[in-house]
Every structure is written in C-alpha cells, then in structure tokens.
Length: 186
Image 1: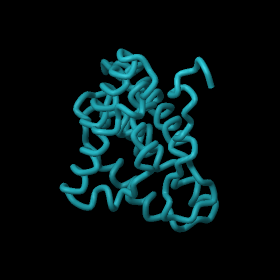
Image 2 (image 1 turned 135 degrees about the vertical axis):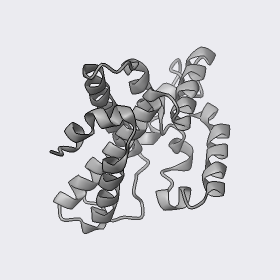
Image 3 (image 1 turned 45 degrees about the vertical axis):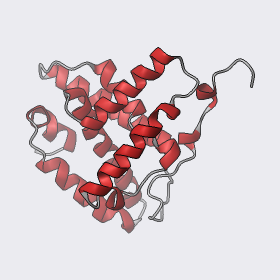
Image 4 (image 1 turned 120 degrees about the vertical axis):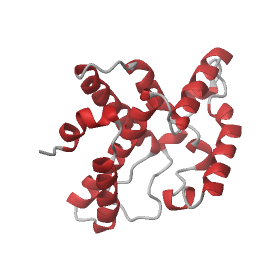
C-alpha cells in the first residue's frame, strides 16, 4: 500500500497466539496480552502515585505496549522452555536483541530507537517503570488463567496458582504498598 509505513500496516501480534501448548476456551493473541499489560500498568501506576511513589506513567505504558514486540518473529515461546536454563534464556534474549530493530522497520530512526530503548529497558527490569510492567505482565497472565479456570478449563489451574503465589510472595518495596489491594487480600 503506497504511502503508509510498513510498520503501521503490520498486525502480526494480533495473529500470534499465546499458550500454544494448552487447550483454551478463549485464545489470546500477543496483541490482546499487550493491551492488558498496558492497562494493568496504568492501574498500578495510578495506585503507586496515590501512595506517593514517583513513576513515569506514560513511559511505563509505552514500555508495556512494546514489551513483547519481538514475538512477531519468535512467536510466544513457552515459558518452561524459555526459562529452562540461564543459557537458553540468554540465547533467546540474544536473538531478540538482533531482531528487535526489524520489529520497528519502516519507522523513522528516532521513533524506532525510542521504542527499542523502551523495549530494552523493560527487558532489563531495573527501573521502577520496567518492574511495574513486569508485574502487570504477570497480572495479565493471572487474569487470563482466571478467565480459563472460571470457564471450566482446569489446564490453567496450576499456572494460576503458581502465578498468584509468586505475586503474593514478591517483596519489592513499591509492590508491598499496593499488593493487598491488587490481589484482593485482607
């Protein structure tokens, strides 16, 4: 299509399905997952601001929107494989670093560089914004599992329980301020 940057026309993430090894009642695309991660990031940022934490909400939401951009090439690599060992995790990260420029092909250099920078920062998980996105990513997984379990899909029960346990036990100082409210714990 003449005149429109190829990136603008690329909807690949809408067609890459997550949880490919599990039967699902409601298949979820990477694009859907990214939306919920961004939405939960917005909620967490607002809660943190209310608690007096300094966080760049716009930056965090932007990170959430691009956090899985490389999956347009790799697909959704199953967690047990991707995190099988440090060597596998590092190999996947290395390939992603080589391919991420292609994810933003067709955009101007400054826009592409900005998006790659956000993607890289989120991947490192060092800034508060990146940590919030990682937590929102886990909340997106938790909500997907809850949806499947409520519909009678027992294949997601163990994933739900493991995710809830991880979220409950996480002790980041900023997370401790809002964890009970987010997880509905008394």
